[in-house]
Image (tube, rainbow, N blue to C red):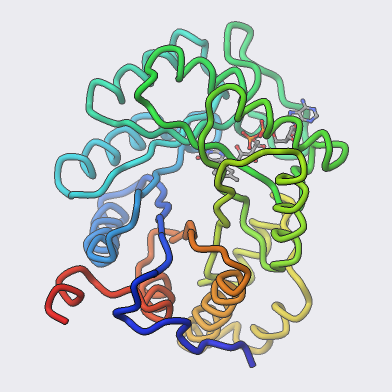
Length: 302
Ligand code: FAD
């Protein structure tokens, strides 16, 4: 049984730092759902909330609109994801300038997946940023007051030949001005802890924030994360065994598993977590509650 004992009580002085990731909605209904989610999670006072950028830049305008609305209608600090895919440097620079003009001061800079699909070779736009370190440098050069976060891969990126090369790229991103890395989702904490050792052994000091994904829909999520190189351990699959038609129990199991994962990381001194919310509040809210995090109004009333 996964241990879900709260590490600290609700008024403990040192609660974990959290951030949330959303994706830009495609339809009005999805938009309403996202805003319900944001309203539910905002009182948990995350350090920032990020909004993804669809593969190939397909959501450029929707990402922008979501980020600007967060900025206008909430007290949250938004971080806009941006990739190098399918756009010239000029076009990307324009996106960065628009964000800056709107008041955005945090970008999650990524190379992005190949336009022809994961597993095929990445071909940069002929006039584009060719690598993530180039993009990081480009953003920092245009606007030194924009904070840049980047990706990190506890199981190494599938394209990287080995961990050393993978960490060379992380080092290049840090040298270009990145100040935080957020990891690809992982379920086996040992991958993350070993990766952290490797990164620190190379002298890289920036926070490597673990990316935590509660599995709302195990089968769907498994397909998705496996394609991105994440291992789904057998013990995890077994926990969802027989629950294909039982969404309620799946939810409880998913929250328990993710809360247990976070608490075990906390026991190793990790105090900052990035949650892949999939635009749903329920599980992430429950996990944060188990960690002792309460909505701001409740904290103040306590
Ligand atoms: P990088 O950090 O540049 O590279 C990752 C690794 O691959 C490095 O080890 C590097 O050495 C190696 N590598 C890169 N290119 C080559 C090459 N040509 N040959 C050999 N090795 C190579 N995708 C989106 O489309 N939109 C998003 O909003 C988005 N958000 C993300 C957020 C997070 C926190 C993470 C972890 C991933 C996200 N992704 C997103 C996915 C990401 O775009 C893909 O994983 C992509 O394949 C790599 O981009 P990167 O910036 O992470 O790669």
